[in-house]
Image 1 (cartoon, rainbow, N blue to C red):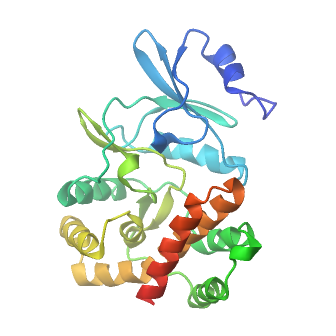
Image 2 (image 1 turned 90 degrees about the horizontal axis):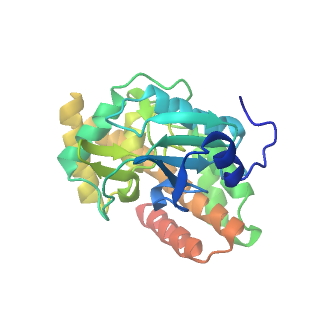
Length: 274
């Protein structure tokens, strides 16, 4: 049953639903965000997560839980509890490294994800791009940003090559190396979309590394590598705008200047590629 009061604190949830668990770590590792914490009972650990994005509908948080329930245990932490604004998932014992897995391993993991049954909701980028514009600092809304936004709106999103469930936030901090293999955490942005969009969105160190990933993925997925590469290039401006807009919005929310530096770096990449 959902809690009727949306303002229940972590202590309220622990007392009511997990009275026999003790708090091990008040903040889980960086990939779990929000008010995440680790709780334990007799050696059994869970990660308790709070819906922390006040700008996102509550339904988006429920979607994360639904995605975890649909996807196999060799890809995701298994979900075990949900109420409005809170969920608990099995704790993944393992290591988070500073770099992504090697290219063959990463390609295999993404292909395994993309072979799963669709989640049931589509990823649509344009509303997000417009939301980030509206929620950014007015002083940061440059003519260049507006021109790029208008250009993408006019062009429309590329027609997908192959629809599949996507993670949409694959970077080193969201990969846990467990004894049974690599798993992905933080499914906040998951949904159904073009596999090329996922490849465009992976946080690769450079274009050469991304090209290797595309080739390895195309070989596994039995897709034409040149066609896939062209589709990834079509998606890259969308992804870069998404990243820049998210950093701009986070700066406006937090006033943390690190987000300005991150946004400026993405704007430079866009201008260079343009």
